[in-house]
Image 1 (tube, rainbow, N blue to C red):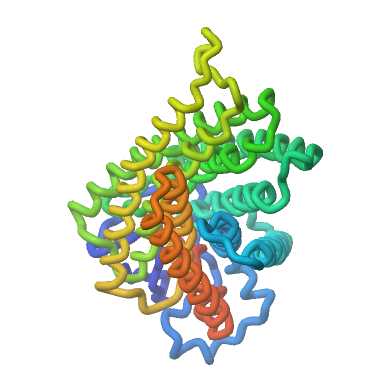
Image 2 (cartoon, rainbow, N blue to C red; image 1 turned 120 degrees about the vertical axis):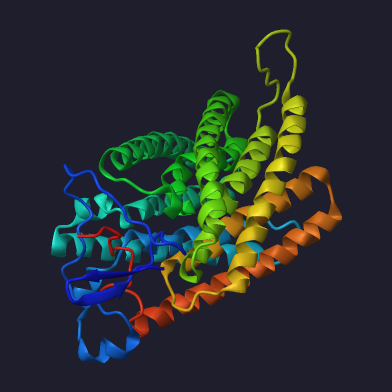
Length: 418
């Protein structure tokens, strides 16, 4: 983690810097990512000398708060998909799902309030750091659409199924546009040294990748005329998101080889790499299971290709699961060796991607009918639940102790040298 200076006020940034100092250059034509003009507080000892009201603190309420709602939505899905159900588990999951809707509404209201008060919506989207967290908004919506299907959709809920179909196609359009526009902007107006690469660079591709997850959840109850196009689109966009992630992995591994593991404050973000292969496994197996009766790839001979697709999906899922486990072990070992000292919202990366890995493990266990792997999934689920509670409590505590939503401590701190 670097120590930067802005005038005479030092601050510690929490963005993508690591063990080696490197100077960051910016397109001189771009007028973006200017640091906040508010005072920068570098440590907790000085915070009693500065009194900020809720209005001032809302200026530092960033897109990264949606990491809470995407994690809560993922937890609701995890509870619904447990291999061993007990009475009341569905109701518990439904409570989590509804609570997530409440959190989403609150966070959305506070974000709107911030933008109305400070008129800085575009500044937040163009910011060299905060902008990378904008996709968490779409990821939260993806978990809510999938949860809507998991908890309320049946073969008899025709209107809801039509609504889910419409939501799916709207989600595909908006997230594809978001991925294209955001990456195009980053390529044009920012310059990021590869030795500072962090998995947050993957986030703009993450929402379009979850189109496959939504298709796998919603296609099972759709008529064949609707299910087949949804699955085809889901595979297409899942592949797009995973391919972009895989290309980013090359830079990430190269950065680890060249400059080593990130500083302790950034290590929770390493879990982001667990997500793409895990959610791809979850999606391809789910979509293969959701193929309508009589499905034929080439449309000739009247063959039912569902069995072939399921075999291929499970085989592909095995090596994706192993890749996800590998990234998980690397990230876990790094965090255990040097735990972060200060809370940041990137701690939620220890929840959502691992929720995807746990769901992938359960899905693979069901496909292989492996009792042992199912129990592994149950154990992983308990760990994810405990981590969710821990990070949630830490988030509330950090707000009360002024460790976040405070000048110099959130994702609105620029990495640029002025």
